[in-house]
Length: 246
Image (cartoon, rainbow, N blue to C red; front, top):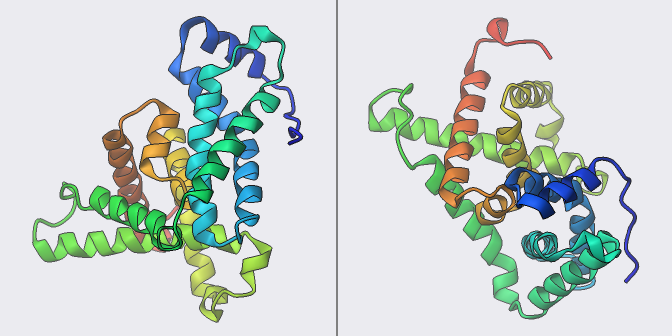
């Protein structure tokens, strides 16, 4: 398949750092730089298998794994463009994965796994700043899960093909104000927390794929996810007069 061109920036420097010292920060930056390229391959390949949402989500998990494998195996000194090298590997991993997935697994595996790990992350330990009662902790958990649904729906709303199918409630002033406040709250997160939230809720990657991309444990990604959702909840619950404008 024809590789899609990548606009040159600091990739040469990143490749030199990664090749010379296996710098995990350089590896993470390379993954971030080339992820849109791998995601396009995943989405295009998924469309050939019917284009169902479950297919696309599974395809993106395999694309992330294929991209990381390509980064680890690539030798810049061979004079081959990374896009050409990676495209073949990513497409192969995605195609093999989709071909071997059963109909039932296509429909439920990724969504169920992601929602289960998301719930485990949020319920892992009580928020020390929340009330101590079980009822208050349950209310915090429900709020965090609701914010997760908002984050997912915000990604859907950005897709013109899906925007017309959204319920009328999404067009209300209250909902738009909530989304505005959510976007403002997202800006208050650290860059790593924002990246994790974006990869999980918008790009649809599970914690295992995100952990591999960042060189961290799955448990650490789970902790950062919980911390980010807790911060978003607190900011959304602040009175409007105290909430920063944005």
